[in-house]
Structure formats: structure tokens, C-alpha cells
Length: 411
Image (cartoon, rainbow, N blue to C red; front, side):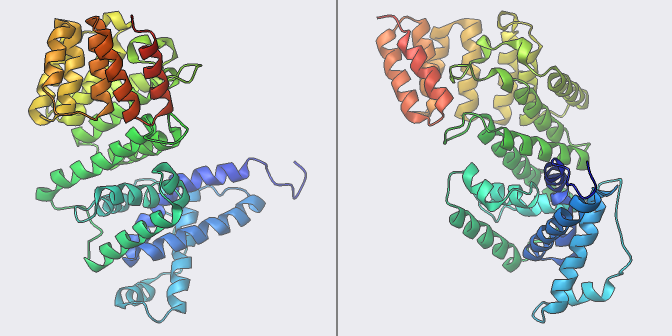
């Protein structure tokens, strides 16, 4: 490039770095100043400066440290201009050392503190998801609003109210005490898994799969794994997401219809993600403290270990679901177990189990009944269940698949 010419890929590189480092910068500022709005504003201003300087001078050797230093200075500049900030902020000003500090290397637990703050039980579950995406993932309000099909103004209000609640309730920026860790960790993992599932099978909109959301969930899962390497459920959730994400290239056909697991091109699965997921499952087995996400990951490991659908060890899948039902006796687990039972004991036995579940209106329940009735040659009943399943889902690929299956029923 000639002198003064801007690298056409620099903006993309800056955005990638910013997304990667955003949670670390915001978490550090939130811990220091105790103010989420100030942390967000300063991080955003640091991006503006980065776009100007990095385009001209190139990306610095330690971009994360550069963003942290710049954002900290911007936050302190704001505090100097405002006389209404509290004693905590004045104290931060007095303690500030103007020597550049660009941390590198080991990850501090600032992000972990922020994750637990975002997922505090005082906040509604949908707010936890939005806050996590905003403060840890660096998604814009518009992106979060689009992901969950609400207006941008409504999402902005939701986030503002949540941050005010954190401030009013004095929810601390800290990792819970040991006795509170497990229940709070469950909420954190549930939020990450909700984000992943929305990307894995979008609940609305024109896109069947949302790769941006699955990528954010995987990034959050890897962050948790980095911060909590001895927690087997963290490893289990990451393994589950990796093994599920590995199949994404084969999940939608050229006609836009969902491709079920048994019909997927296994050669198109991401072998690297499968290997990484299997390694984590083996690690969890060695620890031998099974939890919900570990067992779900183990079930996915059985599926991804089979070279063909016919080679699946369905008896092992049923046994794993039996263990999972002890921990999670809900009807959705029982429904998924029934799918495996159909392969071991036949569709009639499985249908009897499905019919005992109180899941009317849930699209997967109707779709499962339709497939079992199809195998039992009860076409009229199967057609009605396909219709109910189609009506209960807004995902375009799923609707296309169910419509195709309905159309091939015997008269």
C-alpha cells in the first residue's frame, strides 16, 4: 500500500479485537468504578479513538491493554468533568496513577465477577441474557434487539432498568461465596446455553440458524472455561456446544429445510470441534461428578462418535438419559429419551411414553408424535400432528422439513 493509504481490512480487524476484548475492558472498569454506564461509555469512546489511531498507525502489539488504558483515561476524564459522582468515583480519581498500564497475559477474574453480576437471581432471566450479550459479548443494543425480535427502544429500556436495579439493590461486582457458587453458576450456564440455543434453532425471523449467536455463546463458554477450569459443568456445557456446533454445516439442506441428525452428511461435520468436544467429555468422565450439561454432552458424544446413524449406540443413549432424568426430571428430557427408546424398544413403546407427557403445544412434542405415528402407519393421526408442529414453530427450516415430511405420508 502507498503511504497514507488505509488497509481495507483494518476496520474488520479492529472490530474483531474490540469484540474479543470488550468484556475484559468493561469488567475491569465496572469493578474499579462500580458504574456500568460509565464502563460502557468509556469502552465505547476507546473504540472511537482506536478506529482513528489504528487506521493511521496500525494495531498496537497489545491491543487489549491499549483499549484498557484508553478507556480508563476516558472514564477518569468524565469523572473530572462531573461533580455529581459519588465518593467511590472521587476515591478512584485520587488513587489513579497516570503511568500507562497495559495488562497482558493471565486473565483476571473481573469478567467472572461481571458474568455473575449479569446473572444475579434478582434479575429476570431474559434480562440476564441481554445484559450478558451487551456487557460481555459487546453486542450493540440493536443487535440484541434483533436477536430476540423486540424493538431497539424496548431493549434499551430493558437494559437501562436492569442496570438501575443493579445500582439500587447494590448488587456487588464479585464472584459469589463458596456456598452460593453452585446455584449462581447454574444461572450463568443457563444464560449461555439460552444464547446458544437461539442461534442453533432461531425462534423467529428469516434465518434458520444464527451463527453470530452460537459464536458468542461459544466465546462466553470458552471464557468461563478459562476462568473456572476445575468446574466440570462448565466443561460439560462447552463440550455440548462444541459437539452441537460441529454439525451446523450439515443441518440445513440446499432446499432450506432442516436436515435431521440421521440424514446429515457426517463428512461435513467439523472434525476439529468434534475432537475438542470429545476430549472435554473424557475429562468430565474422569472427574466423575456428573451434571446436566455433562450428561447432555456425553449423549452428543455418542451421536458424533458413530460413523453412520445406523451405528449409533442407542442403548447407551437411553442409559445416559436415565441418569439425566434423575437430575432433571422434566418432560423435555423425557421426550428426548423417548426418541431413543423408539430405536431400542420400538415406536409403540415410545409413543406410550410420549403420550404421558404434558407438552401439548410444544412443537417438538407434536413433531415426535408425528414421526412415531408415521412409523406405526397411522397416517391420518400423523398428518394432524405435523400440522400442529408446523403451527407451533416459526423457524423456516423446521417448517420446511415438517411440511416435506407431511407431504410424503402414505394416503
